[in-house]
Length: 466
Image (cartoon, rainbow, N blue to C red; front, top):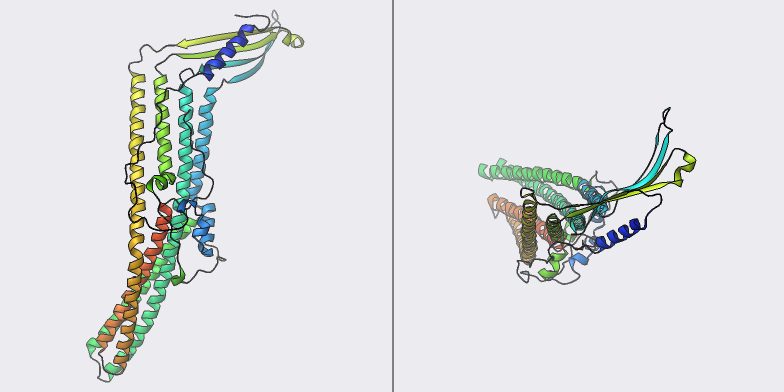
């Protein structure tokens, strides 16, 4: 239909369409968060202070050297950078999906060349191409799904930061433990070389046996083996730290504290219902469930008629000066009612419902894994402190035993085998003490990470089902 001037019907139709779109309802099921399939309390949930999720990592990792390394990692780590870029991709995808809720307007202008019998024609106009009236909420459901996927991607970025902060701290304390093990190996090697010289002198004078001499040589080589192994492990752990940081370690880093002075504060565990829902990995799984729930709405809407509008408004004239004197418009609604599709819509709905069920199971498994993660960390916290205290007491006893054995040996009261056994036991106890302290430090890091510590930026608003 064409007219010289715009008809009031066009405005009426546009208003009616807007009212229809505004009043459309979603066909998606009402979202309900599944119950957490875990216990109501964590085992060994002691501890006091500020919760981990509310403790800034700069306050928790107060060592200036470690804090500087974490800052560099947050700026240069490539895995974290990919997580940020994934957010941008998801945000752009949401924009693409949301744009389907609005009509696409196109402006076109053209000039048709004339002939000897026909003058040239100049035209210009606006058009709306196949805008779907979202009467059943299909497009709205797809938008909700895309919004939930964006929220899930943002939670994945938070989880990546928490993991990165903890990984840098773990690599840092592991490297510090390696340095301590190297120092112990060097001290032990020097002590054993001194004992070997004394044993060699006693052997040359017929006081010590060849067995004593060979035992002393064996312990010297054992110390050299331990030194080489500690140096190799330090290089491996430092390489891992460099990879996490994202670039070579700066030369102007603050000095590291003494190994025995390294410590991290304790944090309370809280209740699973509060702690687990603060973890980004759990929130990510829930947002994926929200997206799957919204996809069911889009699949259900496909069973109902689809209404699309196509319209245009423009002018044409054989003279440019008179282009806007005459106008024409067209308005073409179209309704498509699915009658037979060989089961495609039903299959798509089944896929969406199964995807929702998979998302529920994934969410519940994520909750269970998070609960175990916290429980394992708390189990270590309940036992490692006592283990370290006992190990230090053993090391003190072995150090006293070595002093007495060395005194007895130099005064000819004890055999060299007694001294060598004391040296061996002391070195093993010293190594075990370093390992126990490393385990305790890494456990404190694990507790902080498992309870959601390491993310300090404002939380992103979760997707809302509309």
